[in-house]
Length: 352
View 1 (tube, one colour):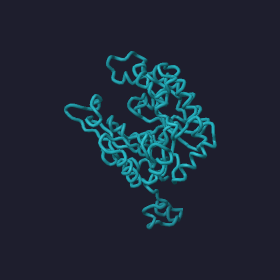
View 2: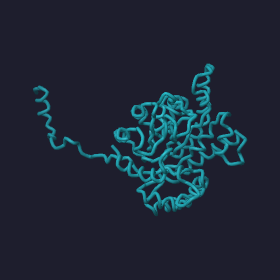
View 3: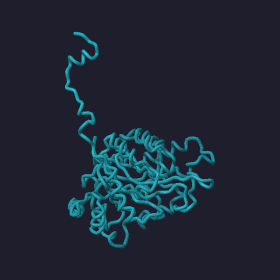
View 4: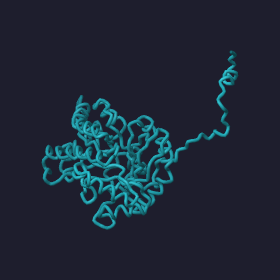
């Protein structure tokens, strides 16, 4: 068994225009002060990470790593969540998702998709240049408006959507395969890959591609009332990344799992800072350790109640307390009996 690495911190929710969250050096110093050992890097803000440079300039990669190393940090993984979302966008969301793309391709879905594909190709190369083993992204969605089967879906619609999604991602998966990097889809509402059944559909559509893997975040499963521990048992060989994020689900006479028109604070299902929700992280860390997960435990802070800086501080301690230092001994070693083949035969009643 292997000891999970951590704690690491996903920076997406912390980057801002205010110190210490407005430069790479200052945010590294802040993260180090809280006890983090690695940072998961978004790739859409060049103040912190220039994706094109990292894909083409090894000296820039050396600079990034040296900057983090100065604060006893490393890069856990890169993230293209926003760019991956744009690989597949249903027209209903065109205007909303245009904000994730540069102005030069906004209002032009084909140009926006081409830009997103190029971003993923760059991410594969940048991850390779940095010596990383996994990469985080979203799948995008063509089918999300049809999640609930009313009006009745026409025959073949779901298969058609997954076949198209697979055709868009297969060249990207091949680029990641060439780079020796696992492409990890965060299983997330709003994406076509939002639960175990949809991931399996996608996996079948890409012929079980070895680089099609999972970023496991149990918060999204709890809000869907999905068995997040059983998911590990079924897909542990595909889980290559781990977001440590808490959530709670409190159904009522007014709301169930669809309570999507309420504010985050008023929803039946809502994200919480680590330790404030309902997720059994003792069991999760135990299962991932049992299955030899060797990646990072990455804190992703999202909470409608708690201040993010408090959440980040508590999150580092939470992960530290949950990481299992694997043993190289058996608890019953004290009673061990030396191997004796003749004794074994006698104990089985076998006479020679």
